[in-house]
Length: 381
Image 1: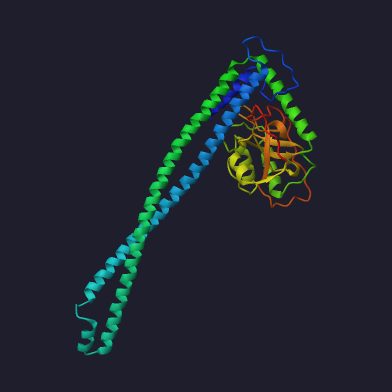
Image 2: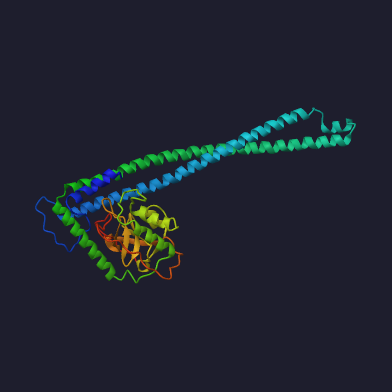
């Protein structure tokens, strides 16, 4: 999303003197007047829009990653084709030289007759060996030439296909970028239509919903005692904490702005353990762990489509980039409906002693919910 659009999304809440955050079932808002939307209905609508934006963002991110890979493949094939064409040129030059040498050295008389007529039979034998060697060299050169021609043709075909795939991916990325912008415009329009009182009520309702969900998760026993992280997990946590307060921006991987999976993938990349870029790929390809076994650095994935992700801090809290208009912050793990958790370094040994990073003032300020669903799936664990 452009910086301008991101600022516009924030404008409505800032103008009202509040920042949007989560909503409680315990808050009992006053009934809406006939024809007006209740606060709960507004929240449901806003959550739906945010979730649609998140899905579009992660789809865009996946295409962007595929496009990066395709660019690298196209460049690799181009380099291989250039090397093969140079080798083909050298083979053709060598074949030409051998052809000229053979033409100049062969008299048209058979080697057997030449041996019978020679005054120096040994010299004739030596000359025949040279001619035979030239013939073998020519056969080898022709073989290399034929192989290089086939390889060049195959590489040229693959390079054309790679370029066509790259062009198609570029076009798809543009369509998906437009989809994200359209979804975020919907969010912007809804926020701009709300009064200061409605924004404040939404913020209070969001906060209460998160508090209630966290209380229920802790009471369920799904989270167990504290566990130390691995060395890489410790580095990932400390990197994420250093990013607190930086703005969310869709498609961003830092260092000034991030989206949710941009933060988690960059944190683990900086820790020396590269992981997939998108939340769906992180959920699909990393080893899953139950919530009761969580340790700092693990990733908590949210929503049935795995469209949101955060990095576990410990003590039932996560570091996350929540949504447009918000900043990277520390949130309760149950701020969004939990799908499950994954561990980027399942073989990493826990550190013998762990001192959690010190959090700056205001680390928990701001909205907690990412792209909430109207109905939360059951937490795994």
